[in-house]
Length: 232
Image (cartoon, rainbow, N blue to C red; front, side, top):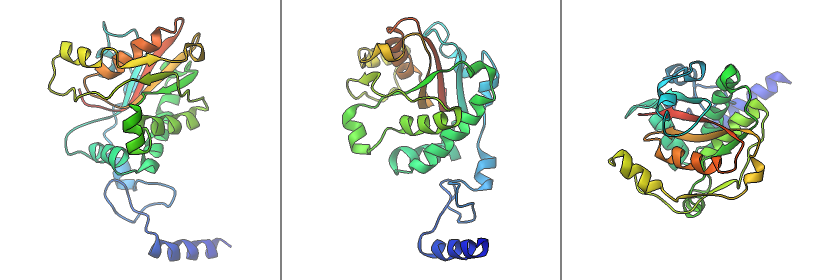
């Protein structure tokens, strides 16, 4: 039976090639969207193991958080930039779920995140999500949640409008650009819980900061943050 399965896998591969989302090779396990070489090339931060890491310090004095982690470092032209592009613009949800599961395993290995009770994906503006077909933060969230065996809470907070790029704005301009962009919809779903807010990349941090402040309006919650990449 195993031999027949192997023959079928090789035969089906001729017509439905399974290639690495990172480098495009077809030399990879059928259940993985990344080959061993690309997995080895992921620029891991290990932020989940260290309090006061650079991503966490980024929110000090701005947002009261319990812990912050980002799975990989982000640099222009890097593998992680390519994977984020595949996830956000090429419909490669399989890669996003897989990366989310890797994030989940990392978080599970850290005592700093062991009191998380539920996950909240950073929402996209509804029109943008309809155009893309999904929310990339939701895809990552699902991968993390399946490893941690925790619920993903949707519809807790809404994004009220699209926003301009934050890259060339000052800190004050970034905050003003995000002011009033989120609305807490279902505070009862998170009150009394330790919530993990999930996004794809921490850049200026203003978006996560604005969403985090809106979540804190629920009262009696603890807030932590996890992102796939850190670029600040």
